[in-house]
Amino acid sequence: MTFVLKFLWATSPRWHVVNLFFLIIQSVLPLVNIYQIKLIFDTVTKYTKSGEYTEAVSLLTWQVSFTVGLLIVNSLINSIAGLVKTKHNQIISEAILEELHKKSSTIDYQYFENPEYHDTFYRIQSDGHGRIFSTFNQLQSIFQSFISLAALFSMLAVLHWSTSIIIVSSVLPALLSQYKFSKLRHQWYQKRTSLHREGAYYNWMLTANQPAKEIRTYGLGELFIHRAKKIRELLFDENYLLTLKSTYWNFGAKLVELLAIYSIFLFLIIRSLNGSFSVGDLVMYYQIFSRGQSNVNGLLSGFVNLSTDNLFFKYLIEYLSYNSSGKRLPDSEPFPDHITDIELRNVYFKYPNQDNYILKDISLYIKRGQKVAIVGKNGSGKTSMIKLFNKLYEPTTGTICINGIDYTNFDTHTLQNKVNILFQDYMNYYIKAGENISFGDIDNINNHIRLTKVAQCTGASEFIEGFPHQYDATLGKLFDSGQELSAGQWQKVALARALMRDAPIVILDEPSSSMDTIAENNLVDRISNLIKDKIVILISHRLSTVKLADCIYFIENGSIVEKGTHETLMGLQGSYYEMFNLQSNGANVLY
Image (cartoon, rainbow, N blue to C red; front, side, top):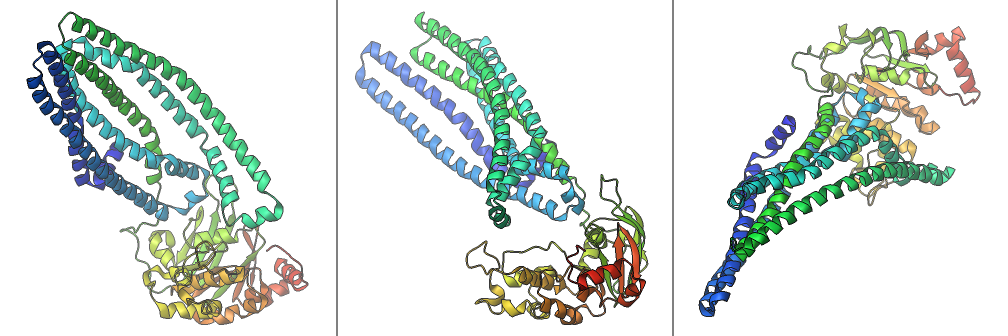
């Protein structure tokens, strides 16, 4: 709770002060209005008995006019307070989203491959955001109720010392019920987070663009609709059962409140009949008691809701406490200006919370200016090795050295800026073509000369410059006037993005997998000027690309089983030789 209070205050102290000012006014004005109505009733009662109507009309005109004026002022204050609250909520919302976006863009990559992380983030995304607003509103409600109660209890003390105790006691059953079922609902939500996420996943598959083709091709719509419905029905039934139980409890608690208020009302009537109270007193105290009961309920409920909200804040605190290796570390070793080599020394790697090693005793050495190919069947560990090169993960044991220095000594952000990567599962950005490419060098996003150069070298310029708006054309059909691309064209854009930055290390994972044969055969020649004098790592099973490498490493079951040039490996007549012959004969082998 301390974290949330500090966060809310830090978003905008000035708006908090303005909010408090209006809350105080909103707390006091209704009480003044109640007292004014009491005076009107007393005036009517007094002059009804005396019959002095002229004087009564004059006094009542002033009292009613003052009361109407109070109502107008109160309405105006409420309207202004509503605007202040809307603006304040907007500021808080922006601060929350910015904090979450900053964290999600720098958090260690390994969290994105952890189901527990996704559960935590789902809770924040679906409920945590609202909980911060809830806390903000509850704090305002508590403050306002406290101010009102201070005035109300002082007025009720004139009536009888026990009235304040009766008000507080009457709302305790409702408070206990609310606390009990808020806690049960939180426990249920925590238990069912994964199921909620599964339901959201089916909803995404049924409504998003990416799965739409396969859903129609394979007729998966009815199956996914059925599964999504089963999940919704299960969650609805469990939620309904909780709601039903809480309804019984809340009804009993409401009966206690009603008995209390009508007992006091009966007491007020008896006092009025024996002449102790005027009609105005009767009306005033009834309204005070009703408002007091409401304010006590709001005050205590506010504390209960704060307690419940606090259960959810642990997820937000947990999320914000995740490691962010992308942060610039002041004590990191300076990254070398000139990279001469990369070396993997006896590297073993397994994913967190996994027992099986993906990579086993990997040792390789790459000099500047060399093109190295890593080849192997699907699941052999090629893509995992890329994640190590880019420091998305670090070796479980063994070391990766740059210029002979363990790369864990370098700042992660700086290292990643020195590595260009085309991932096999590259992103298709549904934005302008120029930005699609220039995102590869965010520090020089307006370098149009470099942009057009890499577009020409990768072949992306051939279709982009044919669009009406060329590099300002929006790619994809997600937004209006977007230009649809083929898979091969998207890959050329992604390759251009991967080469946009003039980094000393270039890693290309299946750079031609979606391209046609002509584009594939010309690929290395076309980008040769962009990768000259760099450390280049190619991961591919397309032999037209692989056989041009200076050294080829063949990985099998996470270990290097063969290494050498294309000619050397063919001479060994081992796994690489077998792959080459199968592909030469047109076999569709998964490598």
